[in-house]
Image 1 (cartoon, rainbow, N blue to C red):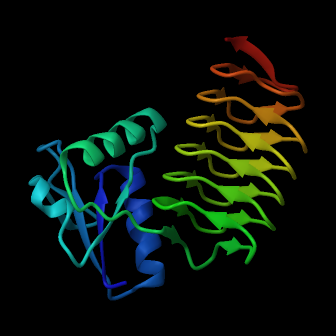
Image 2: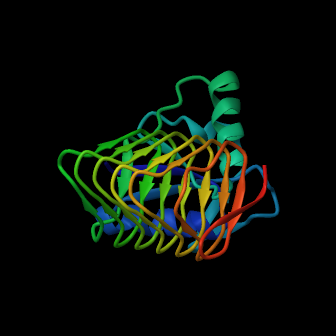
Image 3: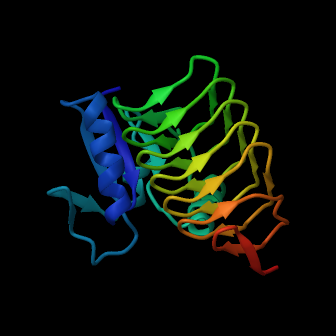
Length: 207
């Protein structure tokens, strides 16, 4: 791969850009953002014309940490702009990914993250810095696993859920769709859709 278009120009976009450069030091990055106040990212000019989103030689990744916003951008692009080619997945050179793991397109595996045997990762997922997804986990689309989070074996995480910084989920737990797991939380039991969980052990504060 010689070039990557990155949709977004905030902090997460910087991480995505440097992840790309870890694999392709001489690669070309094209930043796009619909916020015209964004001028540069990683000292690279930010473009604001949607024509930059589907240049033939580039793959595209959505570099937006908010799961709902990331999903809405994907839906917008699919509905309005033709010939979008999302990157198969983007992996930092320091990440460990099992040969038997499956990664969906548009997904980021950041520096020092681990994805172990037969884990299944959906589309447009963020496996952030130094997080661990153990064997046989199932991570649905648009999930964000925060830096340093740990999912033990056979954990399931539903679409759009955010697992915060340093959170831990014990083996076999099922977390529903569009949940929020607070930073440092330890999840011991299944979590229903839409819940917010905080504390040690994790307790549901909203449903």
